[in-house]
View 1 (tube, helix red, strand yellow):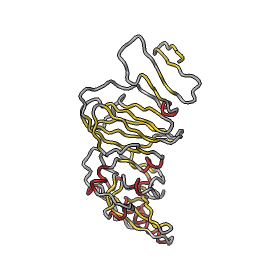
View 2: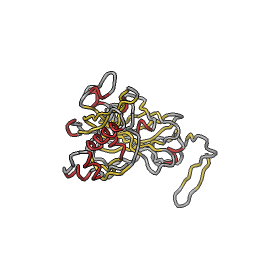
View 3: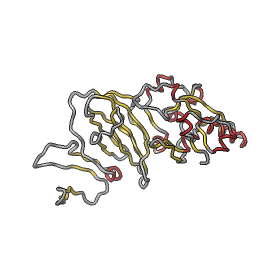
View 4: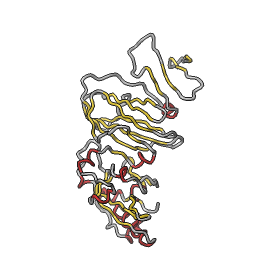
Length: 307
């Protein structure tokens, strides 16, 4: 909470040496300074800690990119608690880069995470610091989906083995276990980073959600997953899943939903796709604990039809 990430220094190439005195004097550092200061604080407290170096899916990481390890150098820590090594990344828990600026946001998503979760974003140069019974190879790491620490903090879980870049035809589905009290929404982006509206849809169950994705044309896409607790001011990015889609025949768009749809875990049974102009349309929707559900017809003059 007292050290700011030196993003301007990193961008300009004028980062300090990471020494303890410099970090404390300036109140800023990059990952090396955070990790060194944490080790020294642990030493003063009589706690065994070490600095770990390796690759992390941080600044510059592209879900659809080749992911060169030499361009993602990062430092974090391991600390021995009750005889057992635990993982810590103080840099990533101090804040995050949003819109090209570092925003202070203290968190504990990277304090003692499960090693099997941590390895989705951090690959140490020395495999022993993966803290896994069977350390992953570099190739296995490259194939892991990009799941942030927040993904696991929210208690989310992918129900299928999903690679970092999957292959699909015109459609695909993603199933995620979502605990009660957590809201989850998807965003579909093309390879240029443009949001593609109307091509994702959520079907909620009691403890999970199925995200249907309709790709508009052949190309590479990223499905970003965002989560929050009710009442939170904003959603947090928790995962980015890449896809290479081979589309022979594009389908129509999905209906547009709003935050209340996710908040109340609604399930629109039909229509799942927007139909052509028609005089008759059948609606079926499941809304848990709702007293009434209505369809509003018209824009300027609205007519409410109770289902």
